[in-house]
Length: 76
Image 1: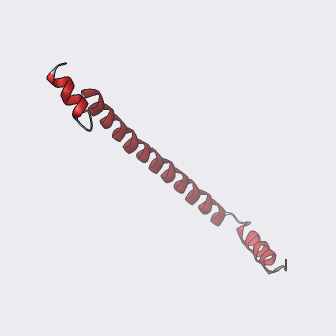
Image 2: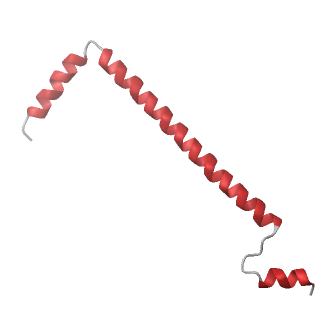
């Protein structure tokens, strides 16, 4: 048994180059995953604003608003 083998067995966390690069890879995946989720959220938010703007500019939106108010006033 070599001294390096003894060190790897005795150490609480065996730090090999494989562990080092896997740790970096996992952190990169977490960061890129978070960035992708933020981009999806931003895209959905911008689409929502676009839909809201179309709804506001629609000439029938006044009629829709009236119908909605009438539906809210209905009992049950």
